Length: 364
Image (cartoon, rainbow, N blue to C red; front, side):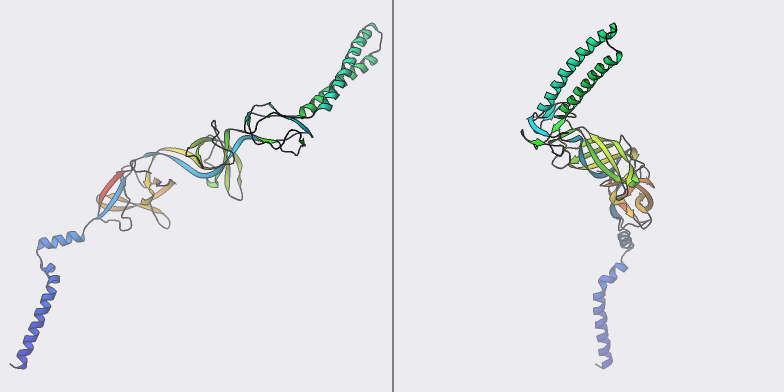
């Protein structure tokens, strides 16, 4: 066997081996038309997504803030004059009524002055009555009678002054409320600098909070709030009744005060409150899940399902909640918005919706 024949045999063996190895890859290309159609379907397989069908909803536009609870009225009880405490007529932590006597200081000297003035007044009044009869008969001059009448008036004024001083020795409740801890005892010497106790009216209570400057034109008296406090799972309600007429320049916020009933005294002044201010009730809002909103440089968009394909829609958004965004422009009731597959989706891409929910059924 010559070299030429050997070379031909060797090349034939190599071609055979190459053909055996390459056959699995070449076979799909030489397959039947049905097989080609199957391959084309694989290439054109639709993206599987989930979506939400938009339906108008009734929502409340809210501002979230934090604030503090204050007593409706609060005063630190002090004495107007110095003196020795002779009686304490209240119990710590109990309710008191307006005008109730709480503390009495020593007024023995004032009582003695008052009795002396009353004796002098009695004599002066008797003298004035006698002189009035004499004046009618011409027994005395008008000038003498006027001097006696003036003495009567001076003594009456003196008694009024003593009564006012005696009143200052009595500390009374200026309004109905709950009295706090006392800081004095019977026998203590107190002055106007001595703190006796604190009196608070805590039904209703005030809630102080602030909102950003951009909401100035939207907040008004009568707006409702909802709030909660630590240590209590209940949700409390209140109503805005006063708004500061200026903006805090340091924080650029508007100070607001609301009132909330507190018959069970669950709200304690000084407590921290998480507040939701309800700005507006919208009956036909278009809400979409937050995840469906795709932010871009100068706009926001969503992917809408349209006849089996993805359609890109620019939207204008408004209020936000924890899970949803209100769409002001761009969508209409009945539209279907994609909520999954947003990274893979492209305008015009065919998609298959595996799950569709109504927006009213979604926890927005």
